[in-house]
Image (tube, rainbow, N blue to C red; front, top):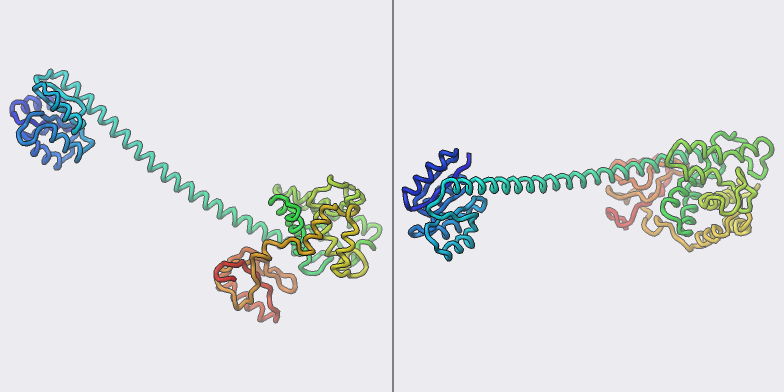
Length: 419
């Protein structure tokens, strides 16, 4: 039920208004002065006020101005019995009245005016309610989206970290059946990544090349021990045929992983030659994926030093010289140039410029590993990007005591006290 307050210093006017509006279902309050009207408004909600203009002590314009100031959502009507234009203007300007009604009034007219005023008032209040609700819901949705985005980002980071850790574990398994020394696969991957960065490849390509380098020996898992000990240049017959198939086999193992198509292609063509004399598909020049051209050189550089390509172990400078001699034949000249710039110190890895090696006794909780922690036997104890806590630090220290060897532990600079 709508509540109407009628304010007039003439009792007969108030009686007429009370009878008129109560007959139409309104709750009607009356006051004989502006002061009394303000008291009633302070006691209970009122939807609409009708005030006479000419009243002692406080006229209608001043009264409605106070109503506007204290209860702005209450609809205001002015009742005037004379043609005082200035007084009406004051009421309009100060009280912002909805309408003014002249005495004597027509009952139907005043009822229609009041009904329209209250309908408009209800629409305005509903509009304000909906706007406030919309604002609140938008804010809640904004906070919800922010929370979801943060959770998605955290989950994505965790998945990426778990993915890379899984790749490194697979790499360690493949390396155990490879031809090089423990840790050589990581050296190959690091060199390949640096050459890719030197060639200014985009981030996704660099990542694929790094992962392919970690997994390049995956196809050798089925090789016999004798075959693994034999340098490639001495393989013959069925052994040589099996060796030449290992890149294809490694790629096939990766193909079921939908996001590893690029990595699989790099692994498959790791033994191609720039002059087209390689295998498995005898691709030549730029038909060979850039990742494979990089990986071929990185693998050969370390295999030459480990005696996997020739019958003796070459020194780094000798291996470098043979790589340089293969430019344009076995290797892409641009990749050879990038290799020379890397090994001669022309490019530094990101980790080398942003991390520091510490003793296990210098570690504190909150530090972040910048490189994998690997034992002398090639066992990966912790993956890079792990945030150290007290339990992990204690486990590293216990491992050093039992093994009798110091672990190489690299952490990010500027994190939890690392300098």
